[in-house]
Length: 310
Ligand code: FAD
Image 1 (cartoon, rainbow, N blue to C red):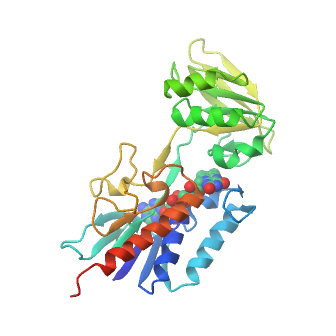
Image 2 (cartoon, helix red, strand yellow; image 1 turned 60 degrees about the vertical axis):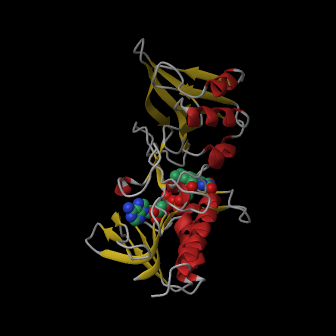
Image 3 (tube, rainbow, N blue to C red; image 1 turned 60 degrees about the horizontal axis):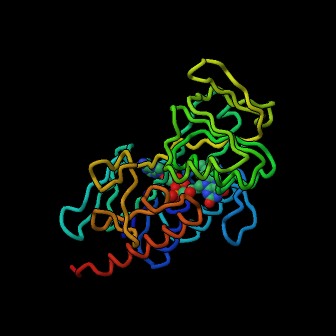
């Protein structure tokens, strides 16, 4: 069995692996796709000490650093169930989709999250070519340009306010008949002079010139008319979904499906820790996921050294 088994190989899982391995204990990482979301990122310009890199390069660097240590990397492995230890301090079992069962004295879940897509023509084609999901990451790329934000919930309106300070103009597109964000955010948004809000608006297409985004089309759900707005970027803000479907009923999840953790990355199950985008920790960013992964590994180590000798 492992001392620490990490499920998920994004920035959180990689940081956890490095920290745990440096304690000289048996560490494994089972990941569907090593590098996680960073594989899908173009430019990364906010990882401290690295002025600029791209996602695939960053993902390879994560894996190289983990491989530098004696860590058992099990790539292309998807976990589908965690079974708690039968007795305190006993082994936790992680069942994989391929039928394998891995046992460990402690487990760190770092399975990340995924942005909900709007699923309209142009979204996949222009991902990273004008279609973006993270205002903290990609907002500065659109300085002086016109952008749209799809989604009028808290994350959409926060994004619109944030972007309005960076870009020339923001169009907010909300499907429902009103913005669902908190009133204080909606009032702030409405006070800005470079924002246009469309409610009852269904995005029908993200248009482009073959290279990059050049506009967005939406249907006015009252008049059924289709409108087209010329712009350079579209931020899709209709939800971030944590990858916790396989954990339902095993450990405590928030109403958004995130794993509830305390400041030391403890979950509701003894010996099971969690880190990164999959948890309730706010602000889903690489530097934060990496920090949380390190914390989870130190907490797992702390848990292990407190187990009675058998
Ligand atoms: P993830 O990166 O999501 O990794 C999750 C890992 O778990 C993966 O290895 C995955 O394959 C694996 N996994 C999932 N389910 C299972 C399962 N059941 N069994 C086994 N393995 C599983 N952040 C920034 O700081 N700067 C940026 O510029 C930036 N740009 C971004 C651009 C895009 C397009 C996207 C999508 C995100 C961006 N982010 C950026 C956010 C950043 O990528 C995430 O915050 C970060 O990757 C989270 O790390 P994580 O390790 O928690 O999860």
